[in-house]
Image 1 (tube, rainbow over the protein chains, first blue to last red):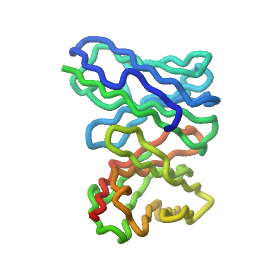
Image 2 (cartoon, helix red, strand yellow):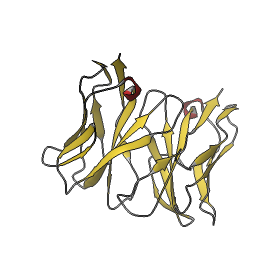
Image 3 (cartoon, rainbow over the protein chains, first blue to last red):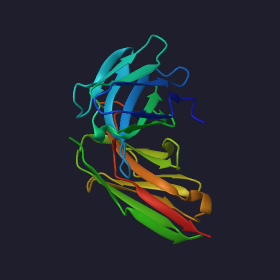
Image 4 (cartoon, rainbow over the protein chains, first blue to last red):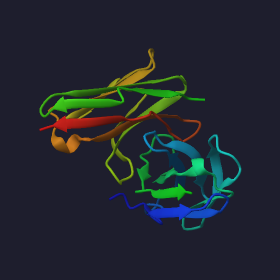
Length: 113
Length: 113
């Protein structure tokens, strides 16, 4: 167990709806990154938060947004859901720095119908 | 941006044999290369990593090699066991972007008892 917890574990939404996914980082970790993993693919970087500020973003549209709270937990929000948003969403927490170990949660499986 | 390619996509070995997974990357600025193991229904778990100032690293049955000139790195698992069966991902990141990883597409390893 990594100490990174995500909720919910599974979610079904209808196209056009909005969704919020949550992540509690490992104790002491102030950096949280979100990844999207489509079936059979490697995770793709969405964005990273460090001390409540966005600290880098991958090639995802603005309808993917996030927050980080003072306790370093984080949310991923996706608006106007599309069928292609169906994927496993992973959260990873780490200490700051370019080569510190990142610990992943178990993910949230989002299905858009 | 960075592009990480991973081969093979599937690999079957007999228990006790060795397994090798290879990755190439495109961005010469990448300098941190972790390997993750993902079991069904779980998030990726770090198994070994290597930094660009090191050519090889070993941890019991697992080793990673890095060739910066050729921009490729490999995972070697010796004396494979059935519990090694999982999907393995390589990843790359650079010091400018922190733990913002570019992942390969994964290798599904099956160890046959």
